[in-house]
Image 1 (cartoon, rainbow, N blue to C red):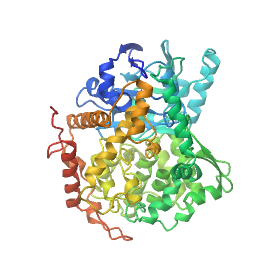
Image 2 (tube, rainbow, N blue to C red):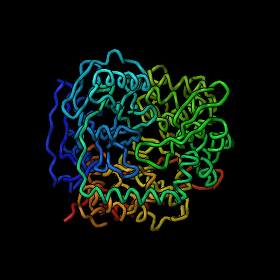
Image 3 (tube, rainbow, N blue to C red):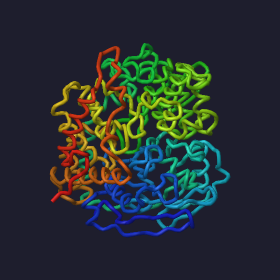
Image 4 (cartoon, helix red, strand yellow):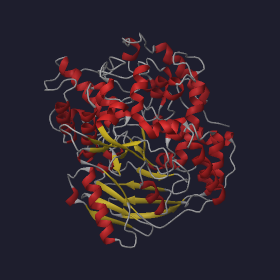
Amino acid sequence: MYGFYNKLLKIDVTDNSFESIEITDELLREQMGGKGLASHLLMQLNPPGVDPLGPDNHLIFSVGPVAATRVWGSCRYGVFTKSPQTGFYAESYSGGTVAEYIAATGYDAIVFHGRSEELVWVEVSDDTVRFHSAEQLRGLDTYATEDRIKQWISANRPETPKCGVSVVGPAAENGVTFALIENDYWRSAGRTGAGAVLGAKNIKAIAFHGRQKAEVADPKLVAAFARELSERSKTDNGVKAYKKLGTPMMVDVLNEARAFPTRYWSKGQSEHRENINATALHERCEVRPNACRKCFMACGRLSTVKSGKHQGLTVEGPEYETIYAFGGLCEVDNIEDILYLNDLCDRLGMDTITAGNLVGLAIEAVLQGRIELDLSYGDTEAIARLLRDIAYRQGYGDVLADGIKVAAEQWDMVDQAIHVKGLEPAGYDPRVLKGMGLAYGTSARGACHLRATFYKPEITGMSDPEKIQGKSEMFVEWEDRLTFFDTLILCRFYRDMYQWQELATMVKGVTGLDLSEQAMVAISRRITDNTRLFNIREGLTVEDDRLPKRFAREVLPESGRVISEENMTILLGNYYKTRGWDEEGIPVPKG
């Protein structure tokens, strides 16, 4: 089919073997690429109940058919596996440049299986797979690892001297359950612990290169579509805002909404927000907009600290979620220290959302006398020490490295720990934004804000945050469209520019398929059903869709809001019904 290679690469690092397998047009029409194809493969390949850190858990890299085309927002890849953090379905996506290098290898998906006896890095090209010892890379941080491999490829592969490299850091080597996969220094497949799975397979890095390019059905249509979108972007207010301020602009937005999680979820506004918002970042740092390949938004902030103890530190960031995690939950009161913690997590290879949540829980454990540790709100150096302890599994860091469910059990804080399915929420308090409560509850990977980005309609007034009736139905509409985004693997920040009609034009130009909105919705719903069935097979029950009890019991002081258990019962019931699932949240076979 146009836009695809119709090829799957299976790699077994146990015996350094690999094979290429044909993917049928029928399967691609049914699932598309990206999330659809990978979810299907994960269901087929993974044994039920597999140990997420065992050799039989498969880890899948996948690109969509728009990768390496002229489509804006298309340079992204996905990683799919069973999560060591939650025990359920795992998906995570990363931007930067690597997606185009993966596509150049000539495969629609690359599957890793088994476990190497020694630490290795894997070179995937369009003609073979090579396995290299990575013992000399053991213990290196993510930046150094990426540099070393790019230098090696440049020196030893003169025919294709440039490559894309995905790496893990010390956290993954040490089995930290929320370790991430990183590329281009600061771009991360960050959530659900895909890096830990790679680390458990004894894979330190993967280098991708090649010269393949999938043929598109209608190059003229794709080119015209890209030109038209580029013209639209010049006057689009959302594009202008992302380019000017990046995601840190959300610090003020969420504080104004009184939904900015602060002091480990006990408040909805930060007293020091003016020291950690977008204005502070742009005043205290030299900031340059930075974009992924094939993107005109340039939402990334390439930030260099101007003065103080972190002078000269350069990070692409911090993103809003990192600011919320450390500046909100842990009450770090200046943007320079947040950059420092951001850089530390990136080098160690840990997800900043989970890291900030775990540190916040640990601070509460100290205040309540449950553990003895020199740690308090706003103490940046103590927080940094704990992050290192987590990455190297030292002291209380060893407990936190196993995730929030384990730490909460050991410290008798189950009723205080904030997570769904073992994954901590992003920076949108569901006591104010009720639709985000539904998002956190129903996401296959845990408390995720990205599967529908439903904070957008609630913050902008498209959906009354307090209204319960009708919300689930609107949520499903958003989730269906953004699930289709993930079959193509498009950046979420194009959600306003790519409605169903734009997606149909894109698909026709790239694949040749002439899909109606109804047909695209059917593909999305098939994928959502598949991920739900995967989780049910792994032990999911309807109770796993419930929010932490604190959200129903503890009133936010700034707004007086809670999200009651009755609210969630209604939201979940309407969601299941709209999805065509039964009362227990189990998909009912169609037809």
